[in-house]
Length: 141
Image 1 (cartoon, rainbow, N blue to C red):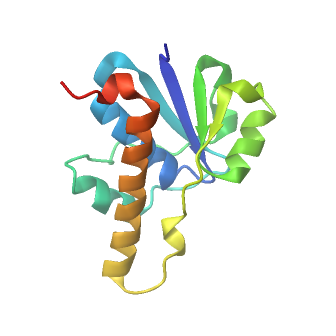
Image 2: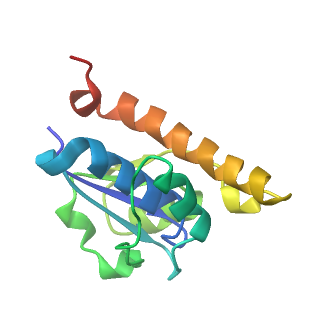
């Protein structure tokens, strides 16, 4: 059974912190969950907006890089970008890494509403993928 999960993306500012926060929300203390990026980044303010819609505060998130994390401490590393998958594979066996192709909402062009909607779609896609990947956490009573 999986006991620890690391989500990785490019800058640990959008996809990986969202995925980690969502899994933490539902798993509680059942799993050790963290996130990291290939490069150093800062938390994207649109992440805070769409996560707050679920009542999840992201203020405590401190972005970190993969080089700052002991990847071997995790049962599973979920790479959310091709670059993160490449970097993780340099340090771990392929079997310990999963790749989820998740769009980058920061590439959305348009007004604030269109951007918030794009981030919300990514958040919701992550929730679906989390429920499929971790049925023991998301099983319905």
